[in-house]
Length: 252
Image (cartoon, rainbow, N blue to C red; front, side, top):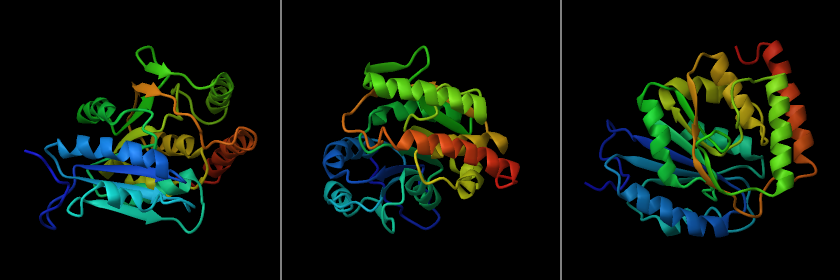
């Protein structure tokens, strides 16, 4: 039985919400959303797609409605200006209604089919499953440029030293949550930038959620939105902000 993603009654509930933060992603969404649409149409559960437009200057907010049919559950949330990826993800997470919530980048560097691996972990009892490019069984088919690889390794060392141990890859943009367990985490998120992943996992761990890092297939897509000059500095400062927030009881 194929699902259109439509809820037939108020008592029904989506099984999966797919949250996609997007800033000037018109071209990528034209390619990635049809693949997502075809995958979801072949599932036997109710689903919804939420695209969070972070103040785009192109037609990002229009593309989802052009790709999906009117009978399918697709929402576009529009931020008041360009607020950042962390802000966008938080808005999408708080708006999602699915039993499971998958957050994925607009370029789908990790194919949607890899969701099955994360879903299996949550079925086993984990509360959060995060895709990883750095485990033994990870399948990185197209690597990042050497300087981004190096920046990532250095950042992970700082993450381990300052706020969060136990995870090799906190920044892969493919994460799945048990909504009922993770809602308290979402409400405590405060970082608007790219360091939101670390904050989210820090809060989840602090609140006792069970987190599993899962090897996934990943292909680098050119034209990263990360400014290699300014963003690393901001991310390192945000690590210190997480520590300060924790010391001040912000995450309690």
